[in-house]
Length: 383
Ligand code: NDP
Ligand code: MG
Image (cartoon, rainbow, N blue to C red; front, side, top):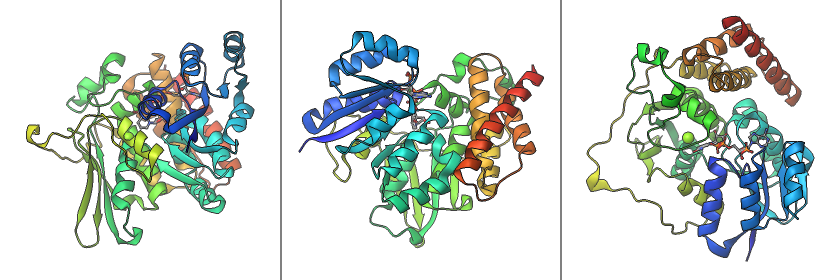
């Protein structure tokens, strides 16, 4: 039977990898909708190949340009996304939009009781407890795509969650692992964007260099698996072969290993509960010299420290961390902020924040908007 899916954020790193998986799986999936922010050239090529019924572009001007070339009706903005997400035929939605822009489509997908293959992590960080509560109430389902969360989720299948002792969240250490504090002060944009293990979008690449990515994943894991921060230990594992592990009450540890290729967790999220063959690389045990593990260096990577602090605070603190981080990363990419100033600005904003302990959705949006303004002002002052 043909299964209908939509790929939101289809022009990004995860989006294009998802379409490669769909292509490799032949006739199994029919792509009903594709969406992007403004990259209409790639979206055009994808629409020509996958022939979706709906294409949605966030920017109205870009939508207008694409409509001239494509017969398919081009939708725009939240309304357009809603039309796609709410389609009755749709079985699964791959949510690969980057940043906080994914929150509204995620909420819509939950309301529509969809199965959501969730790559985006920022939406969960902003409003994790609320999102998980809505998922349960609506009877929707989140299937993790982020490789670490997929690993934990796979280790937990057939296990009872109350038998978990702790989770080991592994991190490759990012492109600056071997650098000294002095090197990090002078680090270039090029070096930051050169990840040793994964090829990804720019925002997550900067987050991998600051280790904020691991901090966001700590929050993501807390919400997805209903765990307190103290039961999740971050472990630097430079080989990035083990994608995370779970220790159970009897001392048994389950680990998930695979080749470092996002198509593996993407495919499993798409085909779950089925596991299908693919042509991805394989783990080569006899070629492995060693597997190394070390504790993260919080002094060298203060963003990770900040994320751990907000994980313990809860409420609107994670949302503020996320918003300030998004503004800082954008400023760094625009060469308006030094790499080592990213954690300083985020900390400043967090210090000024008056936390709402049990936020409603309005509180989340308000905290997000406030933190962005504060971060912009703090960056202006720093320059
Ligand atoms: P990219 O920047 O490569 O792609 C982002 C996608 O979202 C693009 O299709 C982009 O469109 C679209 N988009 C961006 N902003 C908006 C907006 N305001 N409205 C609508 N669409 C928008 O990101 P990645 O693929 O790297 O990451 C996507 C998400 O998955 C992130 O949350 C990331 O943390 C997470 N993730 C990524 C991994 C990876 O390996 N890349 C691994 C694990 C998680 P356009 O191209 O037009 O700009
Ligand atoms: Mg990850």
